[in-house]
Length: 268
Image 1 (cartoon, rainbow, N blue to C red):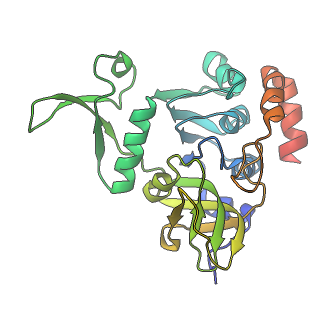
Image 2: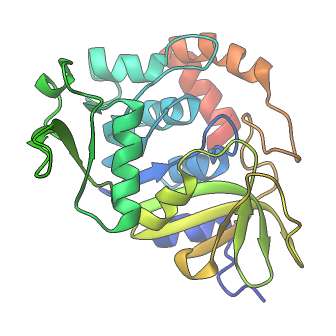
């Protein structure tokens, strides 16, 4: 029987601390919105947020004052436009200044892979000939010791806390997710502590195409949280709430409207 199941409130309280480096990963679906909302409710501050594709989930956390820094490779409201709370923090330091550490998708994926593998850094070709190394300190030129080829090194990602959403956990505490997968596996393996919210606990897994299974021993807390990915979706469990993504744009543009929405839908 699963012995690491907690409530969402208890899991966040136990594992997420002020000043932590926190990653909430998911790609298109299985984005852990419920966990982010609990971090906001618990008033965590000075967080370094890590995510390959920060979207509304980080717009909300940035606007709520949780973040001091963002490590990312792309930021936006998918299919709609900008992240206005992120933009306000960068341009006008509201509600506090936000530091940026920008990478490419390939760079972030390489960093996750290195972190999950226990390596100090990863290598790729992607930055050669670009100007991004002039703006990001965590990009360094190296030479292949075997061929002399000019390559790029990026440091491993090893956040204090990695948080993902998945479809199922079994009675032994193993987790399975399927559908479009991003770097959820690497996020859990690379992080010092990990929380997985799931749609349900099942007696046994049914095989799925493109499924990823995470063993119980790499997960600190499992939280049963049906709908925990909304407004993103959980493949085979829920649909993407496209109307929400469109509605977020006018909500996020105005500080007072944003604060009112957060008070009504998250804080209370």
